[in-house]
Length: 182
Image (cartoon, rainbow, N blue to C red):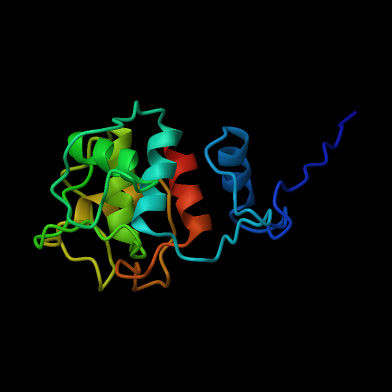
C-alpha cells in the first residue's frame, strides 16, 4: 500500500503545484530562505545582487568575512549585505563594475546570477557545447555558464530561440538554480 504524504507550503503565496515549489521548499527547509516579514516569498519578483549573494553563500555554507576593505564605493561596512559582498569579492565570485561599484540593489540578470551561483558551487565549466539561442553566442563571456546550466537543467529558456540572458532573474528561478546545484 502506498501512503500519500501531504506537503504544505511554508509561504502563503507559493502553491504546492507551482513549478518552483519544490526548490523553494528545499531552500526553506535548509534554512537558506525565510521570505518577507509578511510571510510571503514572492517567487515571481526579481531578486537583487545582494540578495543573490546572501542566498548562494548561505546555501553553500561559505564562511563569511565580516570586515575589511572593498573597492566598491556603494557598499559600506554598515550595510546588511557587506559580509556577503566582501566574502564573494575575496573568493573571486564577483568583481563588480568598472566604475568601482557593485550595485547591490540592482536586479540581477539571469547570466550574472548563473555566474555567481556556479562560481560559488565550484563548478568546472564545460569547454564545449552547443546552444541554439539567438541571445547566447559562443563569444559571450557567459556562454559556458549557460551551457552548463542548460545541460544540468538548472534553468529554462524563455522560448525555443531565446534563453533570456538579459532578463532579470526571478526569486523562484533562483531557488531552482541553487537547489539544483546542491
